[in-house]
Amino acid sequence: MRSPLPAAPPTEELPWARVRLTVVIPVYNEVGTVEALLRRVREVPLQLEVIVVDDGSTDGTRDILPGLEGTLIDRLVMHEKNAGKGAALRTGFPHATGDVVVVQDADMEYDPHELPLLLRPILSGKADAVYGSRFLGGPHRVLFFWHSVGNRVLTLMSNMLTDVNLTDMETCYKMVRRELLQSLPLSANRFGIEPELTARLAQAGARIYELPISYDGRSYAEGKKIGWKDGVSAFWCILKYNVLPPSVPKWTPPSVPSWDTPERIDATAPRTP
Image (cartoon, rainbow, N blue to C red):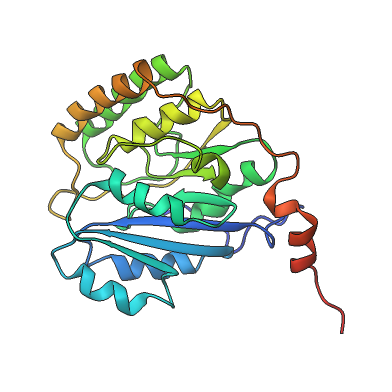
């Protein structure tokens, strides 16, 4: 079930026309959903840069993606072997040129039409990163009880070590200002990227917001990939990235965000005939 969402960004005085959002999509064996997902992303009424990283798919996904480059995909990167979600994201992030970067899974569990809502706190100057939480009351498909319990336990453990009070550390929807994201030392290859990114943002002193999102989770029969072994690995990753962190530069937001520079304002100003 999807939440009722606006067809366009909110109309308050925010620089919607000037900001550019980079959507990084890690893909692994999603031949049945990837094109539909990309079309849904392109419906978002924002300036978009879409980066797809195929992580060694073997189900025909790699045959589809090149034909979508230049229309639905702005930049396509292929991994020859499956290395994990974290590796795919670490490949994609350096290619981002937008003002803000968001992670979008290719499995249709998360609705891209909610991206403008997540972007609002960043554009209004209240946040450097925004998490979309599946546990703040948004519409969602009811699936696995123990997945929910495990997620909450992992989030609690992460919160205790980062001193950040999140409800959904494992969410796919993490939206971060590009300069901040590209300054973070990331090394996780698989699903450990979720606690690592959270730890690095906390260590950088980033202002993190959470907003409710809808969630249409898949069953294993429908292609869900994360399992209990990933949960066990996440415990280790939370400890590793919080107890033994590398040096993370403290984040100081620029006095003028990239979307408010005179050059950007002039480039997007209406032209008189």
